[in-house]
Image (spheres, one colour):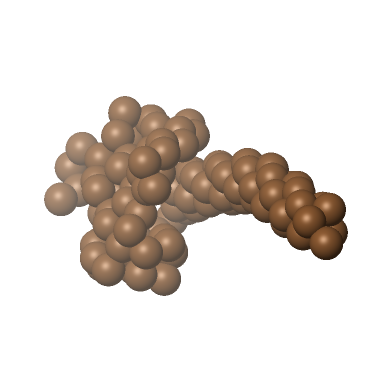
Length: 119
């Protein structure tokens, strides 16, 4: 009877160890996937600004709650787009020369000047 009980205890301990090891691997995969999605969002944001820079439009309205996951922000400065969120930072290059900060829940209007004479 004791052998049966000990075998079940060992079996439960092995199961707990197996679940713990699989959970660690799955968390690593989830983190890699989230980083990949953040990088894709940063690249798409930079691409959108490049298209805006080469277009004939002078204003661009950005709604952070529609463009960003909750808790994220985008800081555009010096030809770079920085996506900040979950303790991570993704950077992508852009041709857009302006500077602004867009946070989740904010709505901002970005204005592009075509020449030095325009206001």
